[in-house]
Image (cartoon, rainbow, N blue to C red; front, top):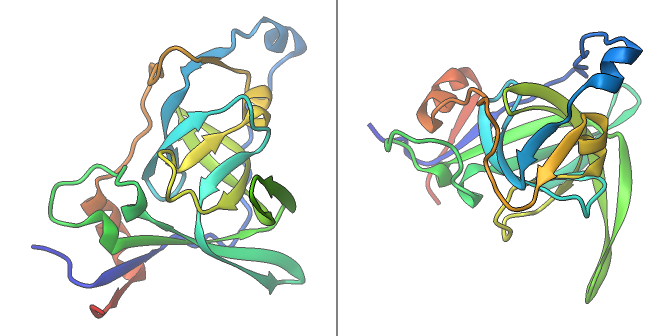
Length: 206
């Protein structure tokens, strides 16, 4: 049975969640062997089971996440931002064939960590909002800062930068991709929709 109309999946998290890594002694940190990942790996956004293809880019400091309709607002005297991730822009979510990627949009709300001014060649500079997001890569949960940008015309909806690699001791093999030995759980497109059925808005066809 196919879903009709535009579906809006709301993945709103109204509280800041912080992932706490297990405490490590100084000796353990010094002796830790860095993880080696390929220049392209799968990531899964925490609490949504949304799977996205990511590029590990040593040329970028801050990570970047595909987002559209980015709108700031105020909550509890703090600056927040709401944004959407259209799944049809990259078709990365596994599907059973009963639902189209383009019919699913995820909506998020996050506190604003900071803003960054991006200088673009041949185009005006652009100020982007930066938020913290938890995600799974290579079977492990991480948290890092993501600038929100429309990456719909790029091959990779997620870009992981040096801040993430340095903080989490990641090495990149630039000659290969998908080297992660462990996988992160992700739901099918249909399961993702069903799990969020209570937060789905069905809009009529335009």
